[in-house]
Image (cartoon, rainbow over all chains, first blue to last red; front, side, top):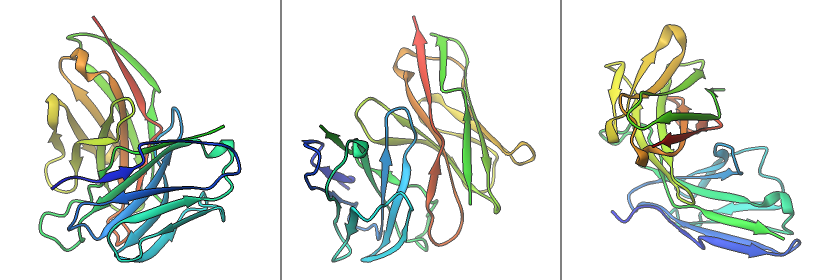
Length: 118
Length: 114
């Protein structure tokens, strides 16, 4: 179990540029979540995948944001035409199938990808 | 939809003193409740969780929390604070439905004074 990994850990970009973050979940986890965390706030839910299907999207996920999980394994979160308000920590989490013995609803988080938009 | 309120954005205690971080939740169904800890520039690490059964749950690093349905609370405590406990603490709630989307409080920053 190598844990949830996110890449890059830090990204500095200029306003208007596009950025992409990648998340590799724990291998046997079929559920994957993206959260956004701004300074001094708790993580805010963005979107959720079960296998390759995107089952829920927050209204926070504007049309400049798109997330994919094409083969039900890793996921990408792309932000187009970045704005200064997009500066935040983007957290990825995963969880095992709900029917798995011992399932408790716990989410396993990665270290996060910090975005700074200048 | 479920939600969480953490009372007190900053809590400061002396080393060796009791730690009490407050969390109240709102949920239309029996909730799952969690406490996570976050150190600077790191992700979230689970401290403890309540799902069913015993309402007093023990976690890592000497922390524990008690689920009180009548008060809709899940406060986090530790009898004796250590300098290494200084971090941001988040209470979270998730429903028991298929989506399992977790909602977090705004967090409480714990400072431990020598």
